[in-house]
Picture (cartoon, rainbow, N blue to C red):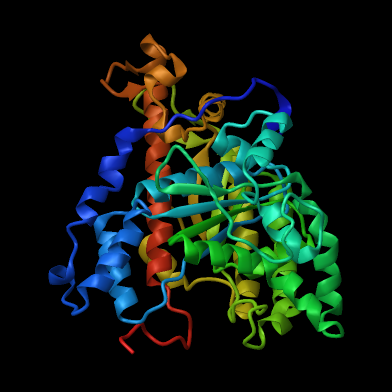
Length: 452
């Protein structure tokens, strides 16, 4: 069921100020100067430090950005898309939690709601139904993905200009996390993109439709100094999704352990290489309407929504494990991925090196990035508060007594508190692994970053 199934009214946003000092000590940014950087233009450095100070990033990130800028290196955000044309695999939940955790680790992150259902927007901003969503649109013009693109596609919208204007992304309770909101009307551009994919060689002006989404997201990321962009895509093999994925730098496939995701992985082994071939003409040329020169690379897949239980009889110290049916489907999905998906993606240049994966991911064999158990009891509280599971407190759920925490005869702790800690470990490990792979990945044939 979508985010907007119920109606609980407009809710005011609550900003967590307790994380600001630890994640983005802005006062320290002002202490950076030419003496620290060793450059001869203190006024220029001061202007750049002031600019990045407003971005709420750590002093270390300020130092890195200013250094790269002074050395003439272009700072480009990395775009990660979450895609599976099979629905119900927690793409939205993953986008929200992954984006939040990366932001908590010091990155400035933009999450993009590219699904017309707008569930990521509702979850992140605390909008409970479509009435709330339309209030948001009315109060903030040109702050969602559809109204930002409508002028390019000549669609009636809240924006009257014929060109893209500056898009003001929405803030969240995490000072390092922002969202480009979704819009149910985003689905309206798909027909024009589909036409452009098949007709742009005869009608060159249509090329801009293919690159418009990529152009918008990368422009926002550059103007507002984002490090990472995470895109929540819809569950469909649409022309719009084709262009979003092929304009990304990386992608992750969320799955659930069942027959339908087994079929989906099998299907993607045909769909993704075909998309690569069909988009190739739009990577040629040097105009502003050209997509990136290289294909996106798969970082791996994330298994989700499985239940765990304690093995053994009468032994509370036994480890928790996945139910047999879930384990069997996970193994089948890993098998079909290894036999079909991975070879096809390697042939198309759409997957990171296995050695890089093994170096940074300790969860499982390539390309199984992480496993996220079903935290069903925590999801309603997380959604109600627009807060990730791993940041929930005892007061958030009004959890008391043994339900919150209890010890077995071996003094091992159980309860909701442990589930929250488990969630934090899972998303921290996942985020760190993804960031390391992105940081270390070097596309074949690309020159190293050096001073010009």
